[in-house]
Image (cartoon, rainbow, N blue to C red):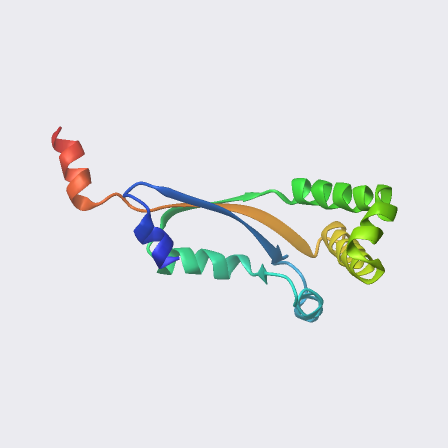
Amino acid sequence: MRACRRALKPGGRIAYYNIFIADDLPVDVRRRVGRQASNRDVYTRARQRGLLQTAGFARIEEHDVTGEYRRVQRELFEANVRYERALRKVLGDAVFEERQSNRRRTLLAIEAGYLRRSLLVAERPASRKGAARRAAG
């Protein structure tokens, strides 16, 4: 994140999506979901905010896009069902089954409220020199 901040000009912004385990779950459920999601990039919301703050970003905004995430996952799953025969020829049976199984598990976790998705937006603070020049100009 520090490298991303350095690459931005002062006042520049970074935006990315994050999939995370819902905050309000009991500890045992969070652990179970975390183990099941171990092959995915699943983080906590606090960890992402902390990374951005530690890297020096400011004005950190978070927008819940879980509804859109659920819609896209459902459409991908259904598209794979529609094109199953062709996909099995290209991917092979084992890969097709694994991908559909993962999508099904992800969709169930989203619908159960276990997984959420956010759009995080943060800004590199304007430099003091630039802020002073703008104030004087």
